[in-house]
Amino acid sequence: VTAGWQAIPGFDADRFGWKSTQADCPASNENILPGQCKAGAVELQHAHDGANTYAEITAAQENTAIYQDIATIPGAVYTWSLKHTSLNASHVDAMSVMIGEPGHETAQEAERVTVNGHGDQTGPVGTVIRTKVDNQIDNQVTDQWETYEGTYTATSTITRFTFKAIEG
Image (cartoon, rainbow, N blue to C red; front, side, top):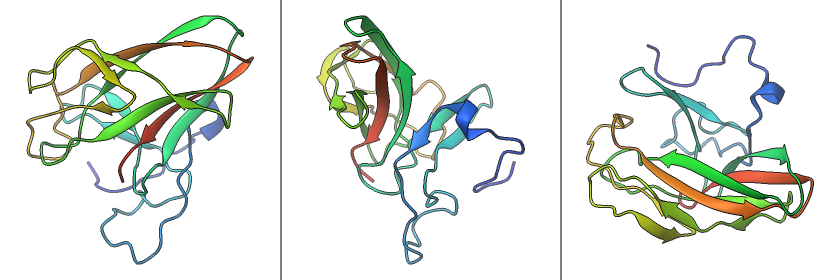
């Protein structure tokens, strides 16, 4: 296993579907790993146990997001669901699900439907998702994930589905 950013041979960003709002970081930012400061970065991580791969909001900059545009039917109600975890116990990561016509997304009300046993409760969480964990080492997130859900009524034929980092 090699640490740091690696290009994926033959990777087709258009087929992948996720895009990023991140810009290049200043060269003076020494706290960010190489690759996390690339414009348009969407990180793919392998879970510590190797059983899963997940997309990560790189969050090298505050208020950056990963998003994709999907075809929708105006007036149709869509249910969304995601799993979220924080990197480690020293910081509770915060994100919002933003949905709407491209350029007009709004933060969605979320409900936590599963908990990982580290202090969170099921029920409505508002528009900011935060997940407590107990791991002390980055990315050791096996069994740390919690599930969040919500609904959205489409207003157009193209809807942008966005995961936005609230903190860098």
